[in-house]
Image 1: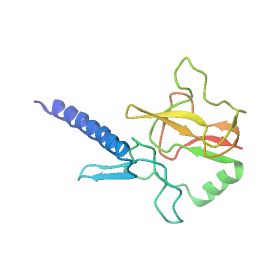
Image 2 (image 1 turned 45 degrees about the horizontal axis):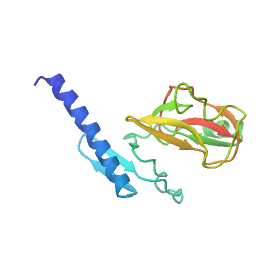
Image 3 (image 1 turned 135 degrees about the horizontal axis):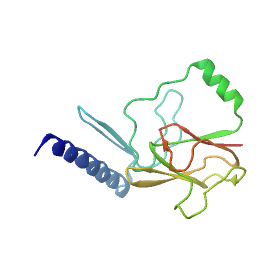
Image 4 (image 1 turned 135 degrees about the vertical axis):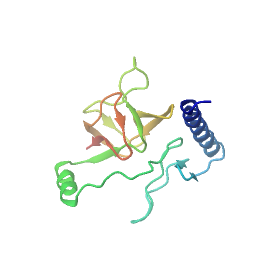
Length: 165
């Protein structure tokens, strides 16, 4: 076995392990599994938990999601304050890394469009991550004021997806 074959085998093996862990979390209704090796940290959240108290851990990610190993760079306080003051309403962010899809299938209409009304719990998009389709539900009621990503765009954990007013 040459080095290239060995690397491909290791990646395939890692993906299979993550998928198996996700099944275990789902089948046993677990809240969280964390696996750490010297090369890799994997966290799989089974269900959404209420937001933690200030200074706590971030809210849980949907089943099948893999937490990012490195946290994204934080904005400076003045830049974050200016951005927040320019936007009104509530921001829906990506709970996982993956690919954004605005509709359930290419031939189907988008879940939501600009100006549409949404209620808490309505599906607003799908994010595909590791061949799993994760429906993203609105945490807010109101009108879709802005959609920050296009169909098929890659999204990062915590990236803005849309703004609800």
